[in-house]
Image 1 (cartoon, rainbow, N blue to C red):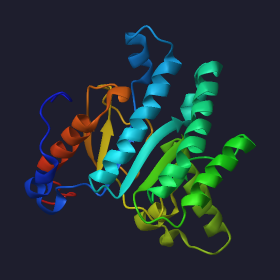
Image 2: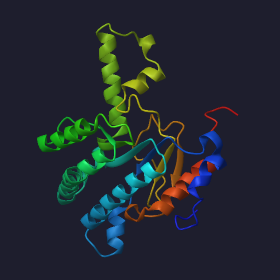
Image 3: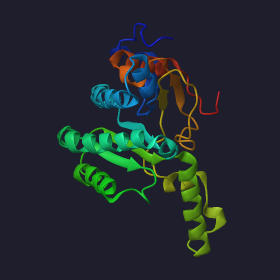
Image 4: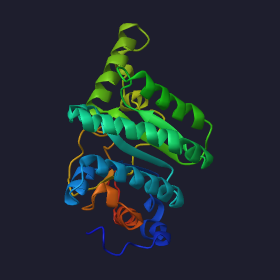
Length: 251
């Protein structure tokens, strides 16, 4: 299915999918910034800047579509291996986005939550992440989860170490470690697992994103590059989700 095909009217999604017609939690692997720039003979950083505009569009669309939780894979633990100039530009864009958009997001009643490893981050970045969370902590609208310096294997390793320390201290027993216990101790503890995970750019892999939480998620892979992600592409993914039958291992 192409992102350019006619999307299913959003008002019909709940009818088409019944109780499961609309996802509560949507997660995005935002892929294709570099290829978008290369196709236009532009530097890769131009693709990242265009990607920020796509993030702004998506946040508005998610609120309009009644999505409760939106999780964005913004920067992975593996992304530090990219060229230093590109990493520096990505950090600059993060600072710019928070400084320029935080007031608007707060005014729109968006609650921001950051997941990922914070140890070792620059103090300025840490302060911005803390500011985004503390400023919006009382908001009750869309929950915007930003996966920054995030890797799912690293998240699970941190969680297992934490639970092992609890057992070692005598506050838990090995029998207390259940799937529910593990889920609550992950970075996303307290949030429902994603119903729908979308990846752009035509790549069909999960890339160390929400490995535990994605156990029963529906996946939609779209050919469009991330900076081109728009309402039609989002509605196409939501329409595809509405047509799926989610059995969670049952019949």
